[in-house]
Length: 173
Image (cartoon, rainbow, N blue to C red; front, side, top):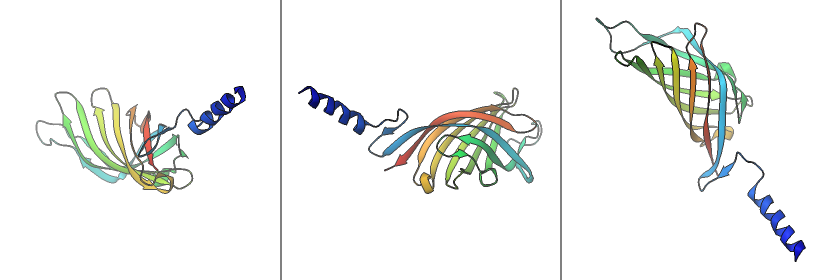
C-alpha cells in the first residue's frame, strides 16, 4: 500500500510538469516573458509629427521607424535588423505633459522566429520617462498564434531608450 501511494505521488508530479513558469489553460500555454534592451530610432526614416501642431504649441515629432535590440526570455537575443517598429500616430497633452504614440512592429529572435506587436508608448515630456504597453498579436515559427501583453519602462536618452519589462505570452495548443 505504501508503495502504491509513493507511485501515485510520483505519477502526479510527472503529469503536473516540472516548470514553475508554465501554466496550461484551455487555450494553450501561458509563459511569463521578460525583456531587457534598447529602442533605437532611425532618423533617416522621416518624422511622425504629433498633434496638436501650430501656434501656441511646440513642434513635437518622433522618428517614424527604428529597431529593437536586446534579450528576452523565450527567444534569447533579438536580431536587431529584423526587429523593427513604426509609429503611425502621436499626440501630446500639454496639460499633463504626456505624449502618446501608436506603434506596430515585429521582433525576430535568435533562431529566426518572429512575433508581431502593437503598442501604446507614453512619454512624459518633462521627465523623459517612457512607458510602453505592448500587445502580442501572432507570429511565425514558435510564435504562431501567440497573444499576450507586456509592460516596459525606460527613459529617453540621446542614444536611444534603454528599457526593461515583463508580461506574458499565451501560446496556442
